[in-house]
Amino acid sequence: MSNMNLNVGLKSWKRGTNILDLEVPAQLERTVKTGLKWFDDAVGGEGMTPSTAMMLTGTPGAGKTTMCLQLAESIMASGNLCLFNTGEESLFQVRKVAKRLNMKHGFIAGQDTLVDDVLTHADSLHKAHPKKQVFLILDSLQTLDDGKYKDGHTNSMTQVRAIEMITNWCKETYGIALVIGQVTKGGDFAGKQQIKHAVDAHGHLFIDEQKNSETYGERLFEIQKNRFGCSGKTFILGIGQGGLYEKGSYSFG
Image (cartoon, rainbow, N blue to C red):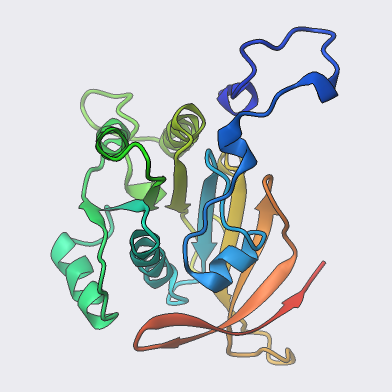
């Protein structure tokens, strides 16, 4: 796995340096809100730190794509930029969902499968709007090709190489990426463990199917890993015409 995530702002670091003498880059001293309040609360209350690569997983039908489309719309409404790149659905299908969600601001659409093409698109947005935070949302990791093989075939390590490329892009540009990861029919993460280790944060959206649970049948969203903020809080979500909304929350762990 690449060590880019360890090297941001460390060009002047030398062995023997006291940690208190290390200057944190200004980009890492701030956070950027998505504008979707319950999501910002889930990742620590103040939004996301630039350079964050986050994986989103969840049970089928829980609303992962809906959540990502809401995030994309909210990010644009907050004055920043969001590139939503889809490999799961056509842009026409995404447009229909955007209409159903009654979106007013929209987002930048993409439908690339090669990671290099996705990142080139994101870089062009950053170049054109240097004062805005660029968010990259990818639906989903399993549809991406890292470009290792010229004939276009993929293997079990393709997703690992793809997420490392995306993570490195975040560290090099201070961009923020949210990637939907592959899951089993039961909603458990289905990829290699290297993917979990590569990302900075992991959010999980699922429907509570435990019949003896107080939240049985509810949609729950929790942050299971967060290098830049807190984790351990579960948000109870409802779903309506405008998408997912907060109904309540509680701490776990």
